[in-house]
Length: 387
Image (cartoon, rainbow, N blue to C red; front, top):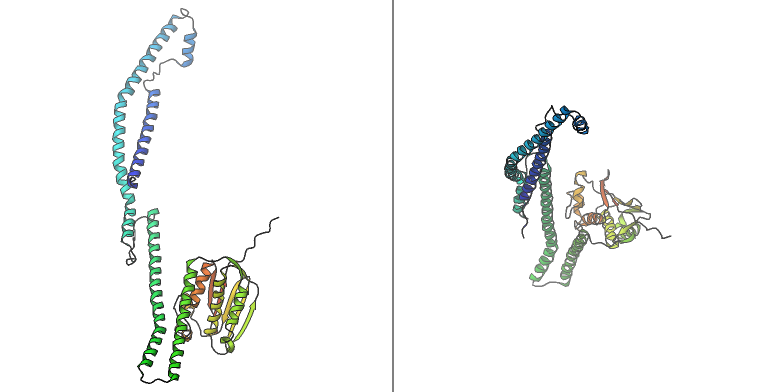
């Protein structure tokens, strides 16, 4: 069964309230009219009437006559009141009926005007789709609740448009970066097969290049899976220590960091989260600090109650480009983009993991080059032991 529209319900409610108010006003008017209509200013007061009625018959003939006249006047006034009120009842009922009909009509028009922005909002919502996210309501008029609702809806559509654009860009960049290693493998194999005579050394070189390209594609796919897992929000909640994750990350880059000065201050940093993702977080930060560095540079890793901080030397980073570093496949035009082993997903995965754990991440450019990245996660809360 279809429910009545909001416009009809508003109309009925408004008309009922109007009729009820008019009926209450008429009742009050009748009450006042009944008690003030045809009052005789020459009537004796209640005290005088009580004195007249208490006087014995024949004791004061003039008081008895006055009492009789007063009773006749009172009966006549009551009759006149009743006739007058009954005569005006029909006119009052007709006026109340006209008021109800007029109230219904006026309420219908007013409700339609009030709900017009909602119809505009509904029409705009029906027009908006994935391919038409540029539509906006742009409601004009006073800054009331409906205007606020329309502006909020426009802001939401704007965020959706930005999210869809980011998703399309992400898919395009991922396809492009995955196509590159596959193209390298395919081209190398086609060139090698086109040769009439190929030496084992040439086949070995092709195999090495194919292995390097497939390793890069594997790292990228692994990064995409980690990014998707952290974005899904389905995480394990276990006690963990960022100091352990940082120590494991430093051990994993011992060989690559041989030409760098690495310092570590790993104090306990207990948190609650997904150990696998937290290991990936620390590993990506340390790996990023080592890869995007220069020979003879330095890397500093510290943990503690304030979280995890990774600093490194390297090419200067423009402060305006700091936010771009945390976007997937976003590389700067400086020397940070020169590393062929970079997939462009490291810091994006870090940010996604931090957000999934309800933490915060900040990045600052060092004056002499390089970055300082600080991650703060909710501390581990240990329930009190029962008494």
